[in-house]
Length: 374
Image 1 (cartoon, rainbow, N blue to C red):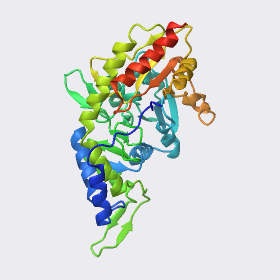
Image 2 (image 1 turned 180 degrees about the vertical axis):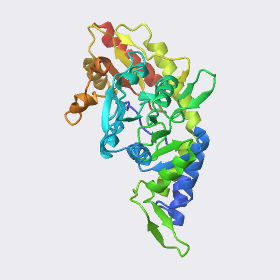
Image 3 (image 1 turned 90 degrees about the vertical axis):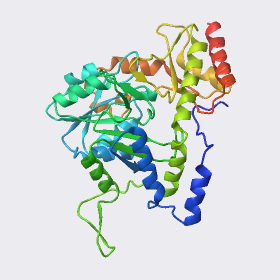
Image 4 (image 1 turned 30 degrees about the vertical axis):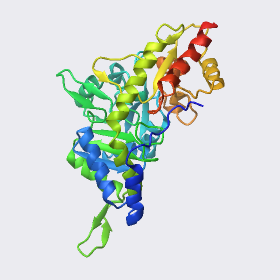
């Protein structure tokens, strides 16, 4: 079986984790927690980075830090993993679903203004599968209406966006907060874990305070808690793995981009297949390589998924629209036609960092085989 996306463990993971075990620093206090935060903010170019136990916690922490709660509305796409939406409900706010673009499959910034009400407090753009939302017009709208922006960059570590002045920004650094995930299938992994970044030092300090049980250490070594906090801390042993993985990040991104280029080359011209769209102002880290089955083509999406499975190739359909799921359907206030359409056509192909060229060739041959038979 060629897996969809699995970790690449080939650096200093064993060395750093062994140091944690040898010194007994395995819990949420230890040098690697600080190192991971420091190294990550250096990579992102942010003023602050706060480790969390997963990406969901990072998004939730951002909302809590900004004081968003009951009675507030947050604009978010339905084409995403449910972890982009659940934190809105955790804090008591209301998700307002927005449609996506046909070419990049991410939040359509042109539709944002029509959804803003007096209750709107934030926008959560989701950089789906590594491809980024058009952030410059989004931020202009957010600034116009004094809205917070929490970038869900959990799938887009390493992606970059170029603004109209020619400057490049890492995913997660254009909004007020950026949330990341280090789940086992992500570009780099700590097994489980997340990170929240910001360029607002005051917000960063508050996020760190809330994430560590709102703890204030007294001169005598005791501690007090002056407000309700949360235990979002990452163990030192996981942070050690994160430091090792981060050392290989640029190499991993380069491999992902080579894989994407090879997929594009081999899939070009195959009947019924629509390749991902590349934008000149976006450097996609290509966490997952994704394709669409073209409209009205005899080749069916789920048929292709089964065909590839029979050939020993693991794939995954695009996310099922959240607004179509029972717990969230009541929050659907507008037709999300593009979301509904794209969700039925999209397939994620194997995208592990360690994927071999011959495996990509085999995958593409299997796709061509089924397409040719149609």
